[in-house]
Image 1: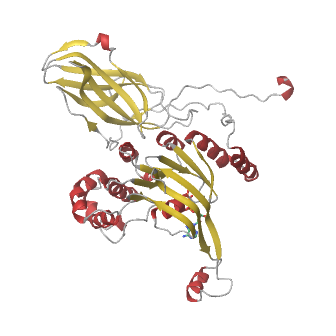
Image 2: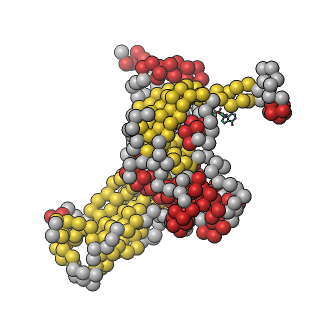
Image 3: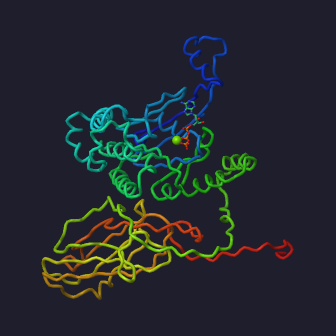
Length: 448
Ligand SMILES: Nc1ncnc2c1ncn2[C@@H]1O[C@H](COP(=O)(O)OP(=O)(O)OP(=O)(O)O)[C@@H](O)[C@H]1O
Ligand SMILES: [Mg+2]
């Protein structure tokens, strides 16, 4: 296998026996040589060929039952292929579907050791990372309870934490992260990005088009056990979505066309209906909605205090309403004099995409000097032009230094908020452009 490849799959087929009656499974075990067998073979993967380069981040998409999990399990070695070859070079850490990986009877603590050693670490190495693993998972005293008592979110927290702390060469994630809450998802995506930046190969299954578009270098569309296309995430996702929404008859022609031509003009989006009377939502504070991925950079003479979002009348809120105005506020305390000071903000998505931000001034207009005991009150009034979902705010203070300008204080994911979903709004995606669609039934003759 060429040295720049991390995973190579050649002619892979995987079939499962399926039995029309449950007791046939038992009969198969007792009398395996019965002529014709007791079950039929179901081919979950058909002649899969893949070459994944070291350092690539590859997303696998496909409808339910298309073979995504089966493929990941064969690559991880938890399922053996019926035929074909799978070569994997490097330490693989996998987060497969719930149920795989942990022994439900053992406690979280025991499973961390079991899992860590299965993934190739010594007991001592797991012990050295244990506190960090538990801190990341953040499941409290449950660490000493049997895993069978965990909620699916707690299970994923611990499993993911182990997977990322073994410093894998190849990280394989099967959809599981969607079980965690948004704060945890953000924390995981931040870690996935770090692992990717460190040069690891990442293979993951996701039903989220935006996640694949944001994170992946390449995507693979699996369809009924076959690789239909691989290519740029944008192209693959477009084809996938067409296939997803096609009727059964259209899908046959579409599959053939995707396979043969590979490229299609993008269709217009679904027609929009006229907007129903808008029910006004109000912003409020939801307890427990907290950023778990706060990273504070080393302070250089300034400290960011109490980042928060307020309504125009000063109420603290974290469940925002699209279209309304808010103020993102924080204070900055200085413990040494500063010069050329300006402050900034940035809104990021769960996967870390920078959606938009601003600074208090351009560099030329920065605050000329601040004293060593001064406190700045910083406010950024903004209109919430975001689609529903969870978002994270950064805060940063810049100052003039001998080398130009650098951060005096900086906090990533300092504050988390959500934009409430509003059934009366038509916007999809991150940004709400206040699109005003029009739709009219016309006689074809009017166009000629
Ligand atoms: N152990 C098994 N025995 C029999 N059939 C199986 C087994 N595991 C998977 N299959 C079948 O193989 C096909 C592919 O399953 P797989 O779980 O890989 O799909 P998937 O693409 O991961 O779907 P999803 O999006 O729902 O997670 C399905 O038709 C499934 O019923
Ligand atoms: Mg699956």
